[in-house]
Length: 217
View 1 (tube, rainbow, N blue to C red):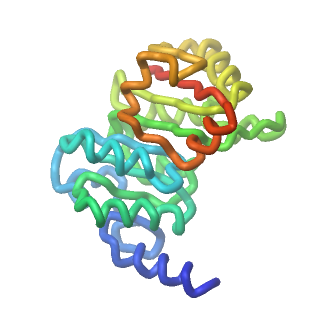
View 2 (view 1 turned 60 degrees about the horizontal axis):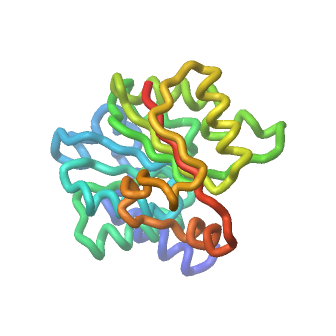
């Protein structure tokens, strides 16, 4: 492992708002996010597969009375989000370094108020369908983690993934609240508060449309 990566991991270790293997909080965080990390009873919002945490840190600045947690397995990506937390002095943003499929080990049923899924890996091969973040097995997990009526927001530039997601939600009889195949030409763009991920910037510069939907359980 290179020196720069070691330096980043050391900084992550020193940041109390990053919950990861090896830290005391990691084994006991389930059900205790408000008490042990945020020190308040505000709503909890997750950004899944958060990468650099652009939405975690961006939304935390827009909504100071909500708690935001970015979830990703890549420590060097989380480190970049941590830099923004430090730079902006955010007290309502945190990160959890795990694989997404293990979420239920770190959150109690009903502990989460809202979930954002922003430009996930589209997993285009049929054999990888179970790894798509709108596959029924993930939807079942989200339903368990969210409080009743909890909201999920999903954004992608992959039309095949978006169409698969809409079809899956309809088949699962889940309430679709809004759907657009062109977010940038929709009134729904306001919900994103000008937050654009690095990948989204690349996609749109190549002429890709951005698709967006939201649904409730």
